[in-house]
Image (cartoon, rainbow, N blue to C red; front, side, top):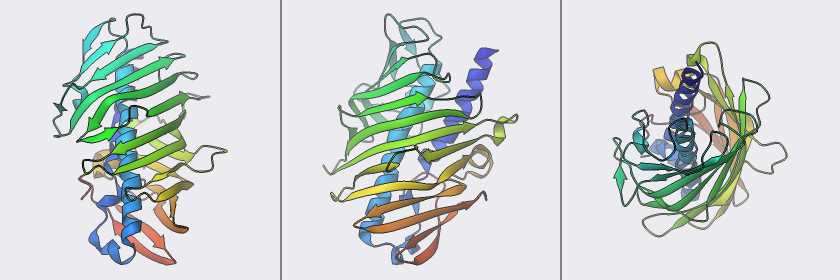
Length: 301
């Protein structure tokens, strides 16, 4: 019974998280160029792409931790997560369900069914119990890790703490610091501090995720873009992601909520609406508002 429950939890987590990762601002149509300056486009795209690439590691960690019921030692990745199907997964010799370490090793190149190539290692360490139980914390670190030749710093750390007080919503705080190096040798940096809630329902298809700025945090994220410009990102109204939209309508963006990216004292306002399952949202810059339609193929073009 418990394994079925965890499997359902993992399935929902994977689908929603992949939906979140698939939506990046670089998917905006070219008509947005009369609203954005080149600097606005670069900052919005860089921030969203960094979110996509770094948040993916949360989801990989969730799926790996979920498989921790297997015997200690080397185990093969499950077929349910194509991203790690070609990786070698090794458990620590003294692992338990409550604490331990697992390394996901992509070697010198591991290409998944979606043609994404990962290299290097991700190490997940956890204490306090299973990922879905209150009081548990897992930390994600990297050793030579890259995806499609975008390299993570070996100094990067991502910490996910379960602060749930009820079966629903399951609640985590996420804090992290990342530096990404691109094939052209440019870099971006990004630190995050937000709270993620999984709003579970009797029908799993109706589940939603809510991302909000952690109470007391100055920003939900801050960093520098590829041009070295500093920016901050605030979530002014919690961002809500719908599992049913991700599954049936392939909507890979929040269905509601607002965020603001600030660069050079300029605010770029994003409004995702009030719950409609579609691919449109509005952007306001210097008092000018434009409706944008994002692609839903995850191409980032």
